[in-house]
Image (cartoon, rainbow, N blue to C red):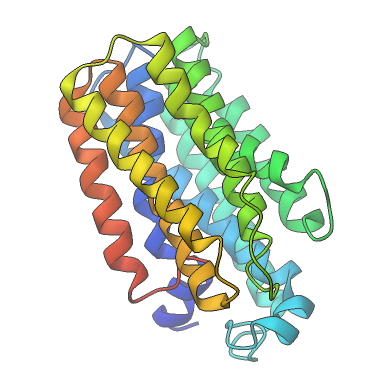
Length: 287
């Protein structure tokens, strides 16, 4: 398998959003220490994400043959059994990295959370087509990703960590509902935007906002307004653009959560990761 096929199958352009999810979970645990655990977490969760993307293409082979024939497996560039094999290898490797990260904290529940995340990934990839529960399962994947990072450092889920996980769940739920319209030739319904707004309402109501929080709040409002505009389009190209932007905006949600939690430097880093994701998506499709 050449590097280009690997990058396409793994949707590597979206990896910066995984990193900011990890950083957010670790910091919101209120037990974060900058040590080797963060590096192992970034590696482990990245491998779990890439594993899920590989598995998605393997299970979606028939759908992609019809609607996305340029995808590596659907175009015959790589056999489906090979994609499955790489997927499970990376999942095991990712779990191993998180296991090592968890050993520093005897009461850590990080590995248990990572196992739950892996199960959710498999269930989603296996049964997401025509499944009304699929957006919820995908939402749980992102929420569990944040919890995995937090539980590597802490043995309990505090309010901030739980609220962060629910915020990512809501954003992912709305995004997935919109993404299901990618290949349908009609206008995209706007009601999923309510779920995208949930993290904004949480922060605005539950937290005393600082100037940097208002910055991220404003950026996310602009993203939602632009998404509302793109929902009117019947063109697949613009729908894909909409979904790619919403994926990149995971890091903006992280930035908002971090800013609200008082981690201003980390919030600015999350903002930069949004730009990095958008730039990478120009070379490697994010969907």
